[in-house]
Length: 77
View 1 (tube, rainbow, N blue to C red):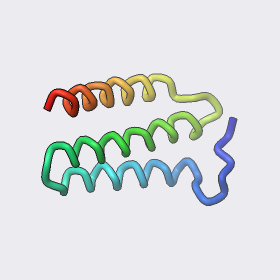
View 2 (view 1 turned 135 degrees about the vertical axis):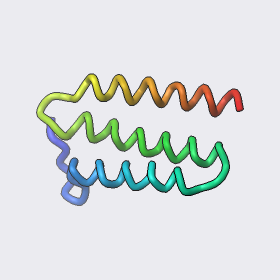
View 3 (view 1 turned 90 degrees about the horizontal axis):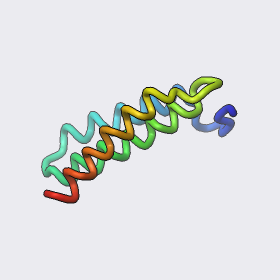
């Protein structure tokens, strides 16, 4: 399955995710940082799913694991 939205190509998702995660490091407040990192991670997941002919499962699993740790940090903060 290929990502077929003309406005957003898979390679653009990487830049968008990286920009959001970089912005997270520029804001103050742990909650804001964690939420922006989660948004960036979700965009990376889209890239890992649609960039290649087959999903990049290893990268997706690693991203989900980091996101879950981030969610635990958000809920116990």
